[in-house]
Length: 531
Image (cartoon, rainbow, N blue to C red; front, side):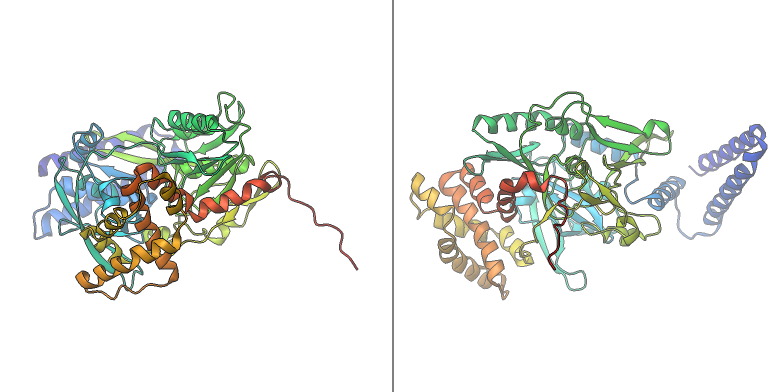
């Protein structure tokens, strides 16, 4: 191994010398500088070989060097060894199974970006924003996000124990959950239903390859149910395939509309993505929901719809990650995913938060927040002349504040099954009639009276915690327990209807439809002032 490593280094140096001889005079100084830097790196390897007390393979050192180089470029480029790549391929082929978590590094911690519906992670009470500390008592600190995701995968039915923390970084609460890996079904569109007599709703979980077809079928189904307007929910959507985002956008635009552009160093990275047809739903009134967990392709789609005044955005500022990456195979069989361009909205906004000049942890601390002041100072205009700003994600037109944060003891209680036990018990006392189902959807005082006291009593007795609550937390806990009650008594459709009917952001969106034309139109000039 050592001899091979030194041969590789020597061959690299010979290659540089050959290039020096052939290069023009203007470029030779740069080539010599690069050669000197390679000599410096070779010198470091030599010192390690001669002086380091422990045995370290050259493959380990080279892999560490590559990871360090990529991290110095931007926070999202990464390296994968042959073994890691093979494991990921097995996961994609369905030979391995996982628990339904999408992770992103935030402030140096592996942080939950999204939890897949009906996955083991959702059942275990894990929430977006939780920070992963260990897998089966092995700390994950220092591991790349991609490697952590792969280590969560395993044989179907096998169990994995996760230790997580929630709350402020200085005084977090820590908890553990044991999850069973399973083949939960993953759909791009997870919910399709009417919110009221004229408004449809669909939730797009991720830009999977089948997302365009599922969105088309969902909207068509809603139109068949007499929907005259639609809410498209992109909250907690971590992104996915660029082409899928363009195809989804094509449903709502006319032909030859610019969806977004990509710009990079090489000409091949510069692409303008246009719709190839007239969208079947291009005249349908549309409101899009986003939040701090909406990332990548979901941000690109939301920004495009906003720039063209095609949809009103409701919710909270998006994550702020929109880069184009390319896959490059290395001679060793390892590979890298390298950032090759940025995504730019039709008005010219860069969605990606600034990362040059920021520390790795500092960069991630801006997730879902505004970027640096210089990034957001420039004002862009939508097609109708409405002012919008770039940098640090996409800002919605209507902001809905975040609800009460769930405490860590909630996840411990969910892992122990206390929530299910209470909800299931109450469900058996309710009539299985359509009238009872309809009444339960809005009976907030009944939820709180029947569900909260026995649940909190059980938590305090078995977990030995104070489980202090306030009015906002009481309301959120009661809604979660009541949704489970609806599912047990009347089925999964009742649960879905319950969740959508009692969602604050969806209700805020419904309030905007009567004013949608004016909200998406040109800014109104101030009228004459009275003296």
